[in-house]
Length: 409
Image 1 (cartoon, rainbow, N blue to C red):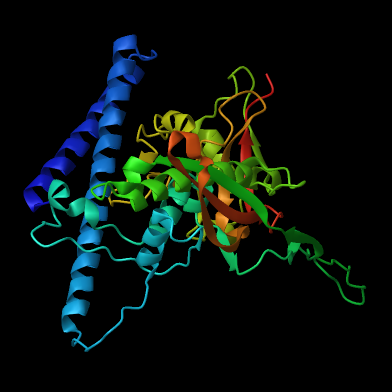
Image 2 (image 1 turned 60 degrees about the vertical axis):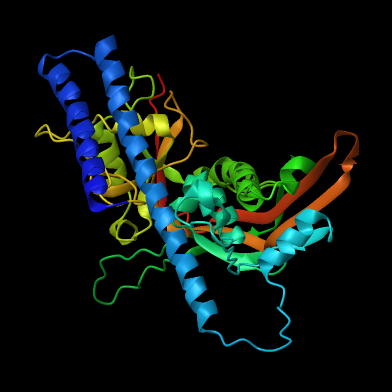
């Protein structure tokens, strides 16, 4: 995309944001809520910003694919031909063999896959070959798992292991304290309190059926389709447990391990105010707030309510992201969204804030794919299943992550 087009997109985004602020400012100046027409305009302005953000993300991904492809060609052109050379099967050839049915089981390893355009096709144009140039299949799969899981975007500590044997991790529940001492007086003992968190390997799986015609149609990006479908399915299921899992025969979610930060006022149906969220920030001590993984986590609708909040000077505390792929911020802290966080309601833990690097996610073994031509034989469908094993737990439960809970009534 040329610079003029990028400039126009930025101008459109800035205008949408100014329009949205103007709607809220007008209603606030008159001391009233948004009218139905104003609410619709507010939602449209936000939708426009989201669409532009999505477009910029697609452009960034396309540029990365182009760069990866050019690098691959440069590497190939630099190689000298060798007589009677036999190509070593790479991951892409293994995947294609698997899709054709030559092999029944395929275990993914995180290595790069490069697909090259045929002679006469233009990589930069999707209808002329661009769709035949994906990035790594494994990277796509993990990308789609992450994009539907806000906790994975927030920067947890990820432990990747080859197997699924239990991992025992020390868990801090109480830090030692100090006192003001005096001469010839015994020092009061204050010991830290540790627990033990065990990371297991729970199984998250999905099953996808693809028509034989789709597999045989070489113009279709089967790898991209499977990466999207399976990545989103597994990411959604695993992500839900990483948020609210009980820890009993399932992962312990970050909400489960978080401690109380702020409770909202009564008569507000669980809604938060700007002061509530600022109090939530300051309920977490400074060493945690200095972490790059410190920020807010909530569902998208709650972020919409947060977006309308102002400080005492009438300035919005929400700041849209100025860089593609970066989250927006509230009062200077990043905001991540996850559909599995509770909605705003009385007694609901609807907002999390803290250092999410203290949440450990364990991924046991590689992502597995298996296929069956017999499962849906009567429909001429090929069946694939995707399996990922993992677990999660908040290892520092002394206040690294805290929650806002809606008022009780």
